[in-house]
Amino acid sequence: MPNMAYFEFLPHQPHSSGLTRDSLPELVDLAEVEVGKEYELVITTYAGLYRYRVGDILRVTGFHNSAPQFHFVRRKNVLLSIDSDKTDETELQKAVENASQLLREFNTSVVEYTSYADVKTIPGHYVIYWELLIKDSTNSPSEKVLSECSLAIEESLNSVYRQGRVRYNSIGPLEIRLVKNGTFEELMDYAISRGASINQYKVPRCVNFTPITELLDSRVVSTHFSPVNYGVWNGINISLSTL
Image 1 (cartoon, rainbow, N blue to C red):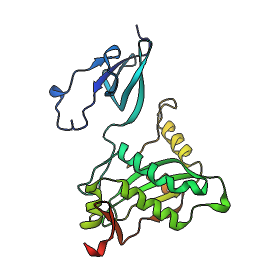
Image 2 (cartoon, rainbow, N blue to C red):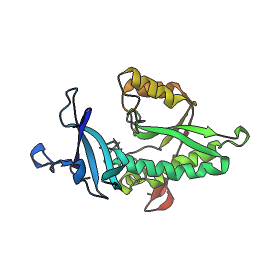
Image 3 (cartoon, one colour):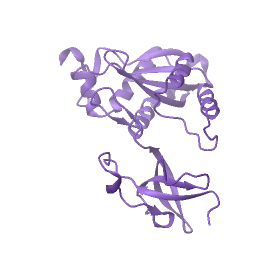
Image 4 (cartoon, rainbow, N blue to C red):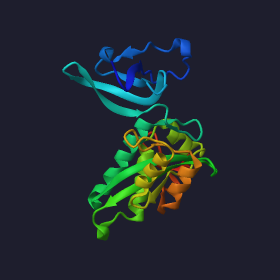
């Protein structure tokens, strides 16, 4: 018998936003998960939670003896959206990874990141908070390189985003805000002070809680936008003025 919690798994359907409670797929037990499939974690605890949907999406990668092994994929339904665009956590992760390749020649890497859909500006735009590890301060990335990183993120996003960004001007240039070293540790400390478990804490990949955005903004050391009059359309770099 479990002495802490009982785990069940809800088969994940990426386009299941319209499902009702009655039409959800049936929960499966730990022994019934299948390799290669994704599941949302559901827990029941002795503390009183009953079939609580945690929101973590896990993929079964294999089995060790009879126990399934899981890979954390993303948080469920974490989206950035300004207009009709929808950017999920997996897409954002891939975009950040692509952009971070531009930092390699400067011996610099992205320590942590999160994001925010800033709709206070007209048009609204994506904000990506980056904490960098710069190993050689005499060869740190320039303003031009960081602006190119912003553009690289945009180039990695879906066609609906790029259409809004370039053709319809309904999305403003993406912005990278560099924050001081240690900022994401402060963010974790803040979450723990509000009751989060240190063992289960994960950096949120999208934030909209005002105290958190205020904390992040208070640690910003520089901002870097994707070129205002430059965009991507159908995989081709073009000037916005030509559309």
